[in-house]
Length: 184
Length: 419
Image (cartoon, rainbow over all chains, first blue to last red; front, side, top):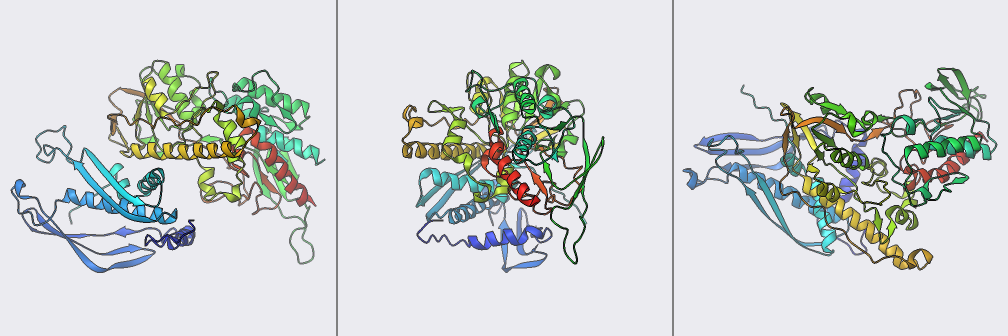
């Protein structure tokens, strides 16, 4: 660890302690994240997130958060929220950024600023059903980090690489996940 | 008793003999069995000959910087067994190892030195006070469960049944895993005229030579390989690291992913799943390249730092520090392959190996079936020891020349235990 006190606001000790404590507790490590969505009108819906399950019991965020989603006016909609596909960029950006902070803390690197630009490329012929060879989702996602920190460029690159390695959203985007959709 | 007459069992025997401890080495096949029966035809060691050492016997041939073929490894070990008079019982397979408690003293635990272990073999039972488990770390190839979803029209191989490219059907081959085995087989198969697609997960990249010396010379001299197991942050992870992307060739060629791509091998991401006859690969390939490149650079920095501190005969004739081209990201890399199209005719799983402890009926295994030990001492069961496992006591434990110090240390503990 670095000699000077590095504080990126991440309680790394708590994470390391948790890793130890959870070694013998396989049920405690099983989490279920939840969201509830209500259609409002047109392509506009609101999704609320509050409760989740983890460490063997029901948990709750401090407050309930509501996320609006819609399509933009150029899609002949009302733009009452960002598009669902943009939420994916929000997830990826925030997951990688949190990871950068945690890894930097663990490696004794003081961060001064971390910004990222995200670009997800998509051909809308997919979602419009115009061409079966065009996929619905992103063809390509590019994340560009600008980081000001007390470390060499190589060390910063290594922090960013490690963040991807341990990122939940990066995993879910780059690897397949089983999705089951039922009607009750 | 010593289980296994590979390099670890032979080294243990030599050290036991040096300490006048009566023992027998039980070997299910012939001396150097796994080198005879569980390797592919063209394999050479990836460690240079001058690193092929057993206690009291070093390589004395004419090519210290070359790399031994399997025949040469087998001969080296067989001759060692003869010259050292290793008491081997060949054709003797251990079918079970159990512990029986010795006679209990008044109100106390089993007396030290009392008979504690029973080995059942295909040739009778043996009781003994101590056992050195030298049965190997690579008894079975690891093949992921998703191999069952591979269409039956493809032939599947592991490094144990591969042998040589001629055994594979003509046509495209999907090699899974870019460790030493994976890169070696990918290159050999591709050169045989069968187009290779290599699925890339986590890997360790190394140049074969650095500043004019073999990279393993650097690992040895700079002290990286001397790092002790109890000084390593995440020892479980260190013991499961994939073998580095090295091959032993007379040309001392580097065989990293750039070299494979230059040959025409196609790279895809880590195999995630097989769905409806399609193999799905991760889109996270770039980051795996970055992680391996960064790790290699840190290692080269360590080498350079050592070289500039060290002012000896070893370092005077070194070339200039160099850095290597980052792993080239393919312009496009398929995220999926249709395994039913006929483009791919066979799969070779280069996804690692693991030990087989099905015969070990003493509760000394962890939840993943690996032996729990402290530097080769099985503390959960006094009198049991292990040799020949990765990073057993030092990073060099994973390689042949690491066995000398390990065998001496572990046999030393065994002798103390016998009191």
